[in-house]
Amino acid sequence: MQHLTIAIAGAGAISEFHLKGWQAQEGVTLAAICDPDRARAQARADRFGIPRVFDDMGAMLGAVTPDAVDIITPVGSHATLVRQAADLGVHVMCQKPMTPTVAEAESLIADVSERVRFMVHENYRFRPHYAELARRVAEGQLGRLRHARLTVRASSLLDYPGRVPFLLGRQPYLADFPRLLVFEVLIHHLDALRAILGEMTVTAARLDRMNPALKGEDVALIQLESADGALIQIDANISAPGHPPLPTDRLELLGEADTLIYDRDRITLLSQPDAVSLHDLTANYQACFTGAVTDFVHGLRSGQPFQTDRLDNLRTLRLMEQVYRAAGVPV
Image (cartoon, rainbow, N blue to C red):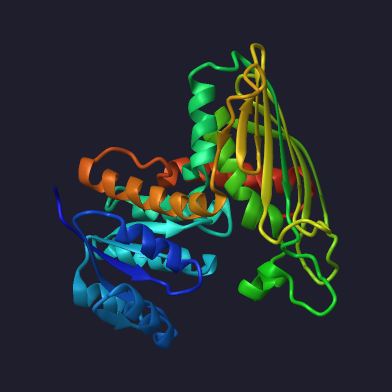
């Protein structure tokens, strides 16, 4: 087994789940972590046993010469840091979205070229419930798929009196995103649907905003069509009164032979209503981070493509921009 030395760039809230994913890997050493807030990086280092701490990624990569770096930083910094790693011959896994726009992603991909391996950490397709749906559709349990409807609900951005909305408490900068729900949340679902249904095209979209303090949208109605002709609908609201802070999903997949329904924590094939597949969503949240890291490690060692390689992820970014264009939002 090839031993891998890994560096971590970014010590924000989401880095905890990346680091737990890295700890689950065999033959991997976490050599260093950096963050502009050095104290925050030190706290992560102390918790996860990382020996070296930096406040600059360039200094970190020069000092520890890792095989790869996991970039867990705000989207506006991704392109600069990925280029910096590629210039040093360091393989890259980078949090989603790859870049703010498709044009910037295309430029970044061209600059990196084949100098290093480059994966985007887009992890919803690694969630065990979505992976199960993809497997069961691929096995032909539904026959030819004709219709799919995904509903996403949360109170993540709902402005309750006396409290900060859940997502804004964790990521306050989201309030200023001119593109919000589709760019920050539904991009995950678009990628998961691609993994389940194949390539899609947006045919119509409407966006709305329930929380007036936001610059971007918190409501979306999207219509798509798969390459095989299936009609797909996404109905999402993350400022939905009465719903939990974290998004809950319901996906109904209707085929010519059967219907498969995923609803929060269970998957049911309607022809076998008693054979319910139950999922622990808390465990699945960490599992998708671990799954993405595992895919990256496997790809580095085997030379096989990453599931969310930069070229695959570019298709998800293009789909996201199609939604905004269909809704009349400048991209």
